[in-house]
Image (cartoon, rainbow, N blue to C red; front, side):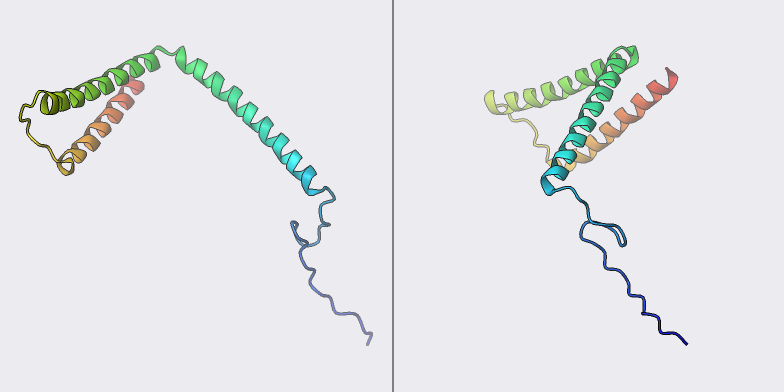
Amino acid sequence: MTDQPASRPTEPAPGGSAGTPPPTATFEQRMEDLGRRAGEAGERFGREAEAAGKRLASDPSVQGAADTAGRVWGLIVLAVGSWFFVDITLGYDMPSIPWRDLWPLALILIGLVVIVRAMGRRRA
């Protein structure tokens, strides 16, 4: 019977997994490398986003949807502004609509807009 040393589990090195040597780069070098890689990823993402924006800007259905959405939001802002103008500035007694009664309607309208836009894209 031979005496063999008992195998001990290796302690994981800080910043590494068990059995791998610790990194040889200094903290500053690692941060510079991280910053360089993040900058490259940001530039790559920017180029991809710009290309996607150009593709979407040239699509007539997207332009029509943006025009429609702009008109709808414009009408909503105009209606709310007119309501407050008539109520506060002109002094007419407008009916009071509590927010607790209005927000479910806003959710329903947003849902309808999403459905209608999706149906419009499906046809195109």
